[in-house]
Each structure stands twice: as C-alpha cells, then as structure tokens.
Image (cartoon, rainbow, N blue to C red):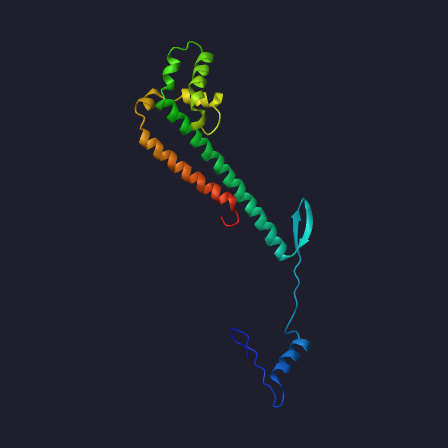
Length: 176
C-alpha cells in the first residue's frame, strides 16, 4: 500500500510458522541490509580507522584533559589572588608600610618590606617575592586608611571556599 508513507502487509498462509516466514524474508530478500561504517580520523597527524567506541573514548579523554587544565588554571589564579589578599591584610594589620617611611632608596624600601614579613612567614601561603613587594607598594594610601578587616576576611573565606571546591573537582575530574 502506498500513499504518503510506504506500508507493506504480508499475509501468512495457513500452516506456515510466522517466525519462520520472517526469517526467510530476511534471508532471501533485501529486507535486512548490513551497512558498515568506516570512521577515519586524523590522530597524531595520520589518518586512522577507528570504531565508534574508540572515537568516543578518545574524545572523552580529550575533554577530561581540557577540564583538568581549565581547573588547574582556575586553581592557580585563585591561589595567587588569595596569596595577594593575605599579603595586603598582613601589610596593613601589622603596619609594615610604616617601616618604609624612613627608607631612602628603592633597595632599602624593598629590604624593609621583606624584613617586615619575615616574622609573619607562617601566615603566608608562600615566600614573599619582589613582584609581591611591588604589588604591595602600589596599594593606595586611601585603601590602607579605609581598610575593612572583616570585609577582607569574608572575601578571603569566599576565595578559600572556591579554591577548595576547585581542588575537589581536580581530584575527581571525571565526576566533575
């Protein structure tokens, strides 16, 4: 029967097993056709024939690797931001900026900041670098005078929470 859609009706003669008839239709007609697919992809700069499962596996591994790298970048960014906020907090709370008032040269300013942070090393995330000192020296006086310790600690707790979440995701990238 044909109209908009093709419809095929098969009348089963009496005494014929319907299952045997269907098997015969598949065996002796083109009711069933096998179609093979050849997936050719470029891998390691060479064409390679792969199965669907192999393509899915390769793409999944690539996705997991990209997610891991993305999380590592986020972790490093958050760690740096937390380190800088910790330094600013210590710089202001311990009035290390007062030590540079008497320094005459850039080297002595740098030295005074380093000396001021030595007793506070256990509160820092890592050692103080010259780039950290430059960042601290760029903190505006207005920001120092209006420094809100509680707000700053809340921001640091939020960053630490986000960093912990990122580290958790890094431990289980597949689940992420």
